[in-house]
Image (cartoon, rainbow, N blue to C red; front, top):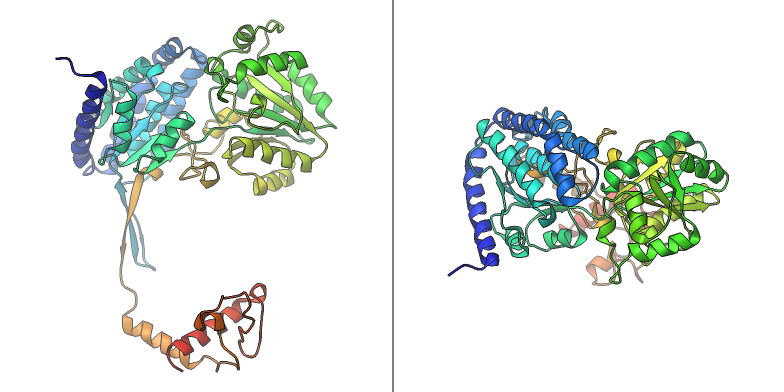
Length: 523
């Protein structure tokens, strides 16, 4: 009797987790130097095969461009390794001589790594490096649409790791890719943490699994071009970013926001550098192709060129067009308008507003529509603009004068190189970090006693003895008489004063504390 494929895939995952769990015991005894030796070998092997794997990814998925995926593979291997190689994340991290607290980095265990089809080979490299650097084993769950190139990347990494001394089972990969297999991996009691990079449904499943998870949300970053910007350079960066690998990096720009006083120069520069402004009729026709009836983006547009998308939508564009631009009304930002949402392809919305304040408000509305917590870009020479936007925008990364796609993942900025970008609480993520080995350890702390119980009692008695006598009325009356703490209870009398909640300062709080201690001790 032939076993059902779903059942076979579930059993495979259980076996892989058991193997990874066993390898974890050995890996947990390795020093940082031993782990680094393994990571260095992985990075070198990935660089050696960067071209081969990039070509495989494009041929299998149809997304992006080979030359850009080579750069992504460099990001996932050499650039990541160069950034993390001097990190100390395992073993004794610090000993504070004053607080007498030690911090020890401890591997989390088994990492479940969900791999997307948009950045398949580079994400396997990156997640393997940051997991093993932190002393963890890893189980790779491939996207079915990129299974072959992901599996080949896994094989290269596994062989390099084991040659460098990693125990068998350090790097693992699911071969029977089913929904049931992924679900079993996410919910397995021996899965220590999930690194979820992929579609919104997959990330939600990771957070709903019952195991710790670090996931991402959709990007929808607006790019504000402010009047002090070097406009030709700003457009060059935006064009380079939005056409890089045909727009498959979620940190890439999704819209341009600018002001009426410079819009003519911005539009001229866009056209000069290869963008095409769609007519109103073309924008409407393309809109119907972008958004499916169920409200989700058409997957056929992902990672395609501007010409391919125009052909599929049945619209005519000039030969050589690199980027499609649709003029949009600032009042038309909503889920039903695909131009105000994430588009993983060379399509940009174009908004024009009157002032910087209007631009600030519009960028917030765009992000609240989709992309909260992720990324936005600014092009300006005015640091005051940067400060004002940084203090107000609901994002985890504000990138200044750099291509969004490469700046967000740390290739052109000082951010940690990463292909998993946390969106923070506002974006439904557990962290706002570019995920690194520091996110894949637990910190064990050793704390020496500094005082004895008798010392604490002595301090309390001294504080009570020096407390002023309670004024007439009741101190914190609401707390003692079961009345509301603030509402309808104006008798918070401290040394004869009756301050409102908003009037309390540090001296008031200190006096209240002393008075409460006195009451509790029967003084």
